[in-house]
Length: 187
Image (cartoon, rainbow, N blue to C red; front, side, top):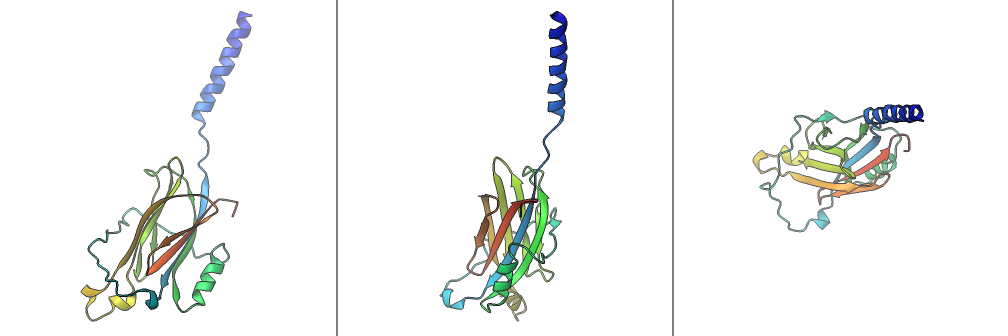
C-alpha cells in the first residue's frame, strides 16, 4: 500500500511539473486593415480644424505591416470604395500576428510611401483582445500648398476592446479605418 502511494505521488509530481513547464501556445490572428479618405464637403460645414491637440505618432519600434491582400474579407469593400469618387483608399493591408500581452506586442506600422498616412496599430490581449489605433492623415493636396505650415493633419487616436470576426470602424470626418481580426485558419 505504501509502495502504491509513493508511486502515485511520483506520477502526480511528474505530471504537475510537466504541466507547469508546458505553457499553452499563443494564438495567432489574421488582421486586415482598410483606411480610406472621405471627400464629403457637403458634410463639413464651417468646422475649423486645429493641430494643437495632435499627438505625435511614435513609429520607432513599429514593425512593417503585411502585404495588400488580393482576395480577402475587405477586398469587396475596397473595390466599392475605389468605385465611388467621394472616397479614396489610402491603405489596405493584411498580416498574421500572435495575441501577446501589451508589453510584448509590437505596434504595426501603417504608412503610405509619401507619408500622407502615418501611424500604428497595436493588437494585444489583456483579459480581452484590444486594438490601439494611432493614425495621422495629412492630405497631399494640403501638404503641397504654397503655405505648408498651414497644412492640416487629422488624427484617429483610439483604443478599444474587440471581438473577433467582427468589423470594427474607426471614424473621423476626414478619414476612416475598418479593421477585422479573425483567428488564424478561420477566416
